[in-house]
Image 1 (tube, rainbow over the protein chains, first blue to last red):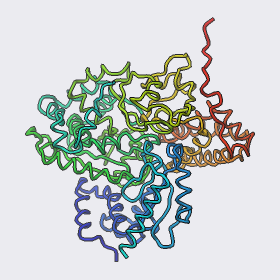
Image 2: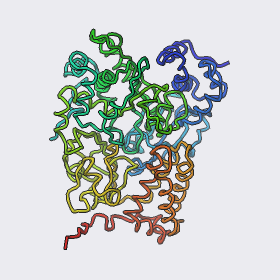
Image 3: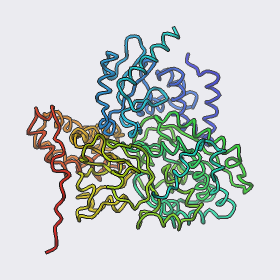
Image 4: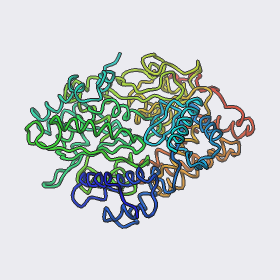
Length: 165
Length: 452
């Protein structure tokens, strides 16, 4: 059975308290973010659990989770590269960056490497146009990307994974 | 060097933190407003300042505030729109990341004027590290008595909360934002009723952009009249421009709204000219939804005058020969860039971001994307160009929210000014895969008709 960690359960209460009495539905998106932090993605079971916490119908959770692109409805790799390819990034060479990552990881957009370490996605404008080309990686942005920088990022992820094994 | 009101202290070491921000004169506007002004007097100063909404629409802020309904016993809310998602725009991020306290200060002063006791900052979900910065600033402000109960002993109470979005451009539209904040899909509401009457949880609500709220700080500190002295005509004060694309110095710049476009692009104080010694081909001056202009019409108006960087200057000539200030997202294209491809990426963006509620936008954005893909990849027909014009004209004005217009305008403007580049793609299906059309005649001096 899915359940938030004790620490996250305390956060849930804190989040619900941000809204007036009876308006706990507003806590839905923050709770889905929290769930994704804990489990990496949102399974139907997770969404039902969140629905229960907020006294919502499960459909109210599904319709939100499917609307917003940041929620993963399938498991993803440990590191998700979301490469922006909208106009301003395209002008600064995002096509080349995307092609290089594909070649380097041997996967296409929407795919995960067999070791489960990397998932590659494209993203529409992430609001970092002046620091293009760029990608989102977890909580943070990696900006002014070059092939060398991509090499370094991938290497660091692999080293980190090896150390944790 | 123009006057800086928002970014004046941006480079002071540690300005992100309360102690430094306060030492540099922070939170004076709260003291002044709460201790010596009534809420209506604060609103009056904002009206006098001529401040216009900095999110893109440019609606006068003081007027928006004065529309707020004030029924007895019903809470009112201030919601800060930090869902910055318009391609080319990254100015609010800069403010929140580096000078978060100016936003918090602006929220307190503005909430006092509006009579709101809770304010929510709705920030785009991808800016995932910024809520930590804002929450730290909120905690610091609270610990120092600027938030919470009985602020400065005046009896005024205020709490500020940060809410993260989930990656949906549409939530930058104020009613979609409110829906999202209520825990629903970001489908825009039909207006009226406007949020000022029926907004968050059906209560009267003002939704303002981050930069707009930050601008309230200098307005209250120095007075609305002082703010109105900067700039020209109805473009008062300073504006944050986020410049990107093929320029030497991409970044966020605060401008007095009385400089020329040419100065903004070519002077070292701002963009520093076109990168790699290339020539300027085109520019979208106010975020991806406003009309693109070729170099010649960007630098000069159809009347042959210098084009200026303010609301009226950028829109001089209407959509026929002008553009818009929009959100201040300034996207510059050099001579090597392909207008068809650039327009395709924007069409793809709008298809991706359409909420799907209105058929003209839901169906039209996808259709335009497919046609533009064909044209870009040498598989288009000449009739496709007119078909695009036709589709966009049927989206514009036929949707609940402005996303429809936002998706239609870039396509319309690209074809209006660069039709021969689109035709070249059709007539040279192989060559267009190998090379781009280039600068062509887009920087040639424009013919200015002289009166007989």
